[in-house]
Image (tube, rainbow, N blue to C red; front, side, top):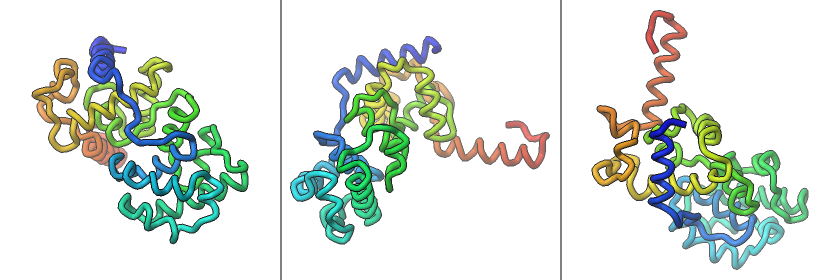
Length: 234
């Protein structure tokens, strides 16, 4: 770990000492449902929707008895109907295969419909206490801008962060970066002028602000060109 990276992690911890989940849930089932709904949706919106969902479908077995058509009106404001379909189908598997108990391993969780690595890591970290670094769009952006990682994908970002950050800080570091991404390091207009981490930030000290997705595309394009023409510099 470089001195800058250590300073950034120390700074994030000082800036957001009380950082925690902004989604509201009380058990693994609620965590799973809320996190599926939160994909491409704000936590605030999900928190408006889930009280009625959890009131009428209080556990995985209850959810397994309904249909996507019945559930969708509850969650419509959170986005696609596929979310309702995935939630119902995932709960059917949980009810049939795990007797209604949400599984507690990455392999079992990611085998459920609509559950990717990020969602599984959220459930593991915040319902089962398993150290993990769920990488969402905020973590991906902030980690690569600050210089905590230099990755083309969320999977590479997760691996690099796990190698860099002490295991006992993984779950909390996830929250630090989300808080910083939502409050300061915005996607389109990061507030570098008022950022306490600016002296250590990789992107802020370059001529152009790094956009991880755009930067990844450029590097991928260069790699394809180099594959076709070895004289191209990557």
